[in-house]
Image 1: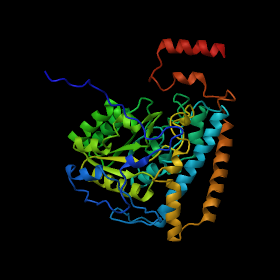
Image 2: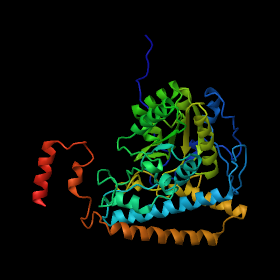
Image 3: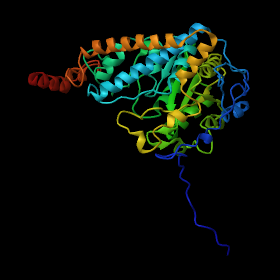
Image 4: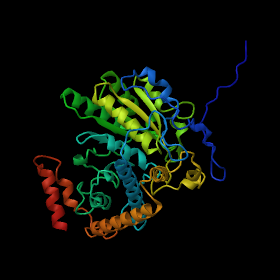
Length: 412
């Protein structure tokens, strides 16, 4: 009888750890401008090569090259850069506010700003985004009042959610921003269902869903792909592969020997793998996917290759599991620096204007923060009134909740 070796499990490991520089060769990069751009009418099966390479537009000199280079105005490029700068400054100020105990928790989109900003410019008013918790850039790019976001973070009297959500879990229907769920991956199923409902009604609005690489391991992810494929739902399924799900490397979720975009191909969905730190590539890929959805050509799954430059959240210390300077060596660079370089190359931006824009937005964010803190923060104890927990739940408040409210009011 032939002897066989003992069975073994393979546990993916990152190529870098604290004290050991990361080898980023696993990223499967492609030169800018090299990847083909098929017509939006292409079949899902014929996008297989696009799910295994990397769509890029900006080269190392900041020039837009190749078939994916979009026809985009300088005005929109400038607006994109401004939104990204504002998002980064907003994030930085809110991290400081959390450290000052003005809120309990915060999550930055540091290093990922281009993805949401670019896509929101490709969408239309009335479309609905089903975000994860790093998509504040979707709102900031639409010039939502920063006080709206800050009051939600502080859970004060002006919080439109009345203190019922964790910080960063915004909800803004008028900005096409569906309520964030703390249960990861549920938003994918919700987005597909919303898109199906839009089609059933004969509407023209599409949905866009956002998820991280780690959450693709959840069952809801595959369920969403199945329904999107079977019913050809008008939806864009965005997977932001920022390399880390809290402290777990993306390989744990299945990104080591295959791409996340390839999962879309396996489910019969047109799929792209895109440089998420390239604003022009992000805009072009989003436009392509939007056109497919809007014209009844079915869903698109996009894997955005990026890097989570900061901690997972203010509760996390990434120096415990990865090199402290990892982001400085990430081969796809900083999305803000890359778009800045492109605009300077076009003669539509300058180092001086960049500095002035940063100063302008720093003053804007500080002013909004001062106003928002005036309504209360966690540190001052002036938070959303406890009695609001009984509101907006039932059309007619049941007797036992009314009795509890009376007891509460008697204690105040």
